[in-house]
Length: 350
Image (tube, rainbow, N blue to C red; front, side, top):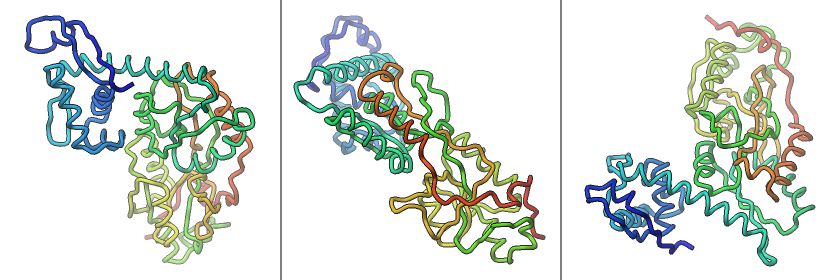
């Protein structure tokens, strides 16, 4: 299917320096997918990673596409690929083409002769680990021949894959989405409470005044924060929470994953605010970390998908199963909110 030749009218030629003419352009679907990935990723390295290609191979295919249309599609700068006028003309048409092809492929699976359907999804690791297994078990009760293709990805990457129609839906935290994407439905799955994760030897049960009731070393640990640098509005909200409840804190580590942050907590380096599900590994909750409930709005877990996929099988059954798992899921061994965290702020030690 990648070796399709597309016959375009003179529209693209008019974006070049040539005189208007009808052009028969030999472009493969593989090349157009590469163009689309580079246009959305902005760098060759990022696009190559998304497509599973080497950067030289990707660059070669992009060069062949530009040669086929006799026009440059990108201005190449260090660490940046900016669309030319021809590239801006081509991009929405390629997006429309890829969308139609993906929808056609999905529709044709209904007529396949004994071939199992595949649901492609991507999500945050903590959500896939804790919610997906139970949902897939329920899915297979109704659709035993369905295969699941799962990718662990960050929210920004999930949005890119949805835009490119490389997955059917994403499993994300709505709070972490930097902007509204009106073309996607957000179907609620569950709410994941936030916890203050502290080292096992830092017992905050019943603590009203940490300045007087904790030792100097314990108080220092409490005020050493490990935070997440996701660059989103949600990250700023969590940072504001630290400033309000632990005004004397010092950010000593910034991480890109909850798992990395918890490793610092486990080592006694400091404390961090994290969604409860992210603190549960394959073997269950970490015994070297205490998890206290805190008064922070929960992480809202949603299935993110195109509106016309909402009623399509087997996606509809899988999403309903995720909602069922989410409603019945109980996060194990959470400790109650310490008294001092129910107040407006913790006093700093002079």
